[in-house]
Image (cartoon, rainbow, N blue to C red; front, side, top):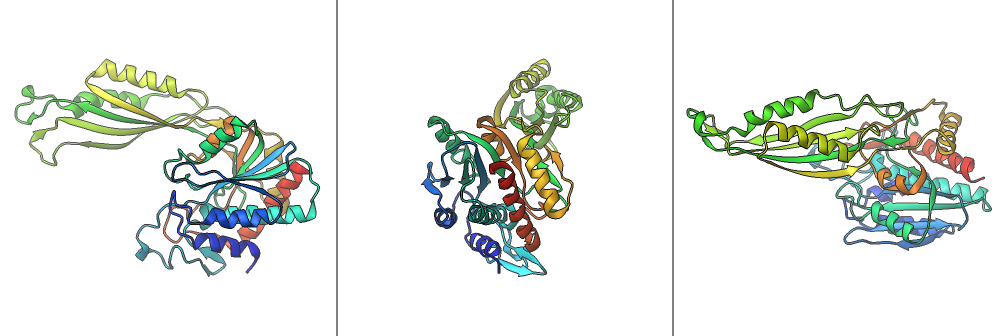
Length: 375
């Protein structure tokens, strides 16, 4: 096996279910230290983070990623053990192979090859690796960025190894992400028998007009980079599971995926005004997962587009689709951020896998991006 497959397999074999790193970062630190990186381990609470840097000059190019993975689920639904990497028909199977231990292995391989060829490159090269991306995401990348800012260490370009590709490697590159705002709503009514509705208040029915209004609003029309803001109800619960009792309360979860045309504060104010107009006996808790960010076409996007085209002749599309990523924490402190990684069709699923050919090509693409930026 090639060096990249060996490294990816070693990382997969460590069951690093978030936020337990299981020694993955020690493996990476050893590889990076061997090629001249200065290593810093930055643990916060139960989360391990790695900051590694080669050089002190500007510009600073950073590879970012996470060693943690989601749980494997029912192992009986896997064709092989999720933490025992296995190659079948040109594919490397295992939890984290695509999201995103394959990308990390490609980054390290690309850096090794780049430094052998270009030991006197301009600027600096760094790694920001966390074990807290798939879970709470409160003691990982966001804390490392705060630490870097406190000592005036500024990232100029950042490539996050999230699995961005859709049907072939490099066909989609994320140059931004929508914001994500979550609401947890409790509506209180008055419990009673369904035969005597005059003696009760049904929280579901009194609040349906508000929910209907929210579902029909056009929040914005999006822009050149983002689709229109979306409001989605993800969960509703109420009642005792019987047909003859009006419930005491209703609980509801909802989410906004929003563009740069609106703000989280504006969405909250508009929603609460609608609620107040219809029924005021409610409580709501808000959680902002991340604000939207965008990297407009420029040095980094051009380098990525050119590198993909030169390696596998794919014309990539810049996109802000998908869920959230740690890019949301890096973007406010970094001039330019993009996400490029393997095909994402199998991530967070049984039998997660990555194509061996894609791993090799991804390492070459990453290496060419470094050459475009740091030479």
